[in-house]
Length: 258
Length: 166
Image (cartoon, chains in turn orange, green):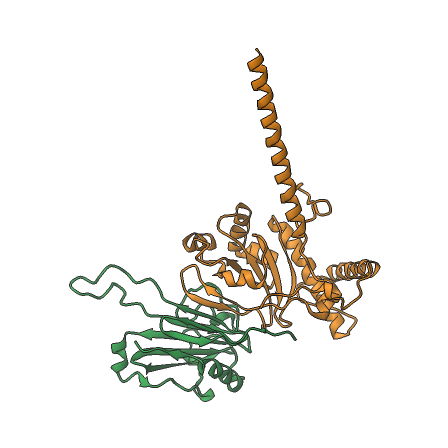
């Protein structure tokens, strides 16, 4: 009897240690995700899922110099050498950093392969799927996921250039200015659509502010979205000012590695 | 305006290389060669495959046709498409091919040079040999009215193309 009780106590103790370890691991994961910008409280979607805000630059950030974008260099899934221009072009480019392994990415692979859904989400933006290079990805699997419909480039260099923290991750590049006008992650196609609308509206406001005219306009962005963006920008500027961060403060800009 | 801070890079594959000038989408392709040989011969069915270089000032969709059937319809009035396709080296010995990399002249662009007639666009095709290799240069401009400035834009990129010896 004593042996049985002792064994039971030992088992319970081991289980307790295991549970504590799991909780600690869970907390560390949550902390890491929050450091990447995931807001679990403020941005719950209608389905109960958790979305991550697209870190769209506030007006002051964009007009004063958002992160510089870079052209992509790598190989196609079929092995072709390729370069995709995203700077000095008259269009937006949506860079979709995906992998063949992550389950969340599969919705985006299938969504972007459908021209209608791709147009719904990206509008007039050129969509480019970017995976890591062949040293970390299976080109044949990537080719299968792209279905010959998605412009896809394997480029670990691009992941480094844009400091991509996780897949799926999305970056919207404004070609004429050569800057990143929004970036972040989303777990569903609908979330991405909403994030892009906001990012494009913010870019329109920034373009308007830098042009010095009172009537911002950008193709595919409604007046309502732009007004929302202007209110959001004003709110962000006010909050930053309250925190003692004035326009031009170095903490507003993050440098990309050369 | 912010610009790419990185020094000008080159895309290099299959003995062809080109500078990555801003605003150009570029791809150097080598299709898969058939492993099935023509009976009684050592030539693969559909012939030997050779590299093709595509460059365009529009976003190039996934590859479809060697001569830009997937890109030319997308060209705007200020856009250019270039295809440099290699042939069997023996073809270079025929009168069709001229030695040396061709220099484009605005006057040679013609709407009739297109595989499929499209509004505003015009093109030209030249056959040439460089370093013992035979090529076809096919160039399409988005606007025949702007052929002077657009052919100059194409020339700027073509001047950076380097062909390595076979």
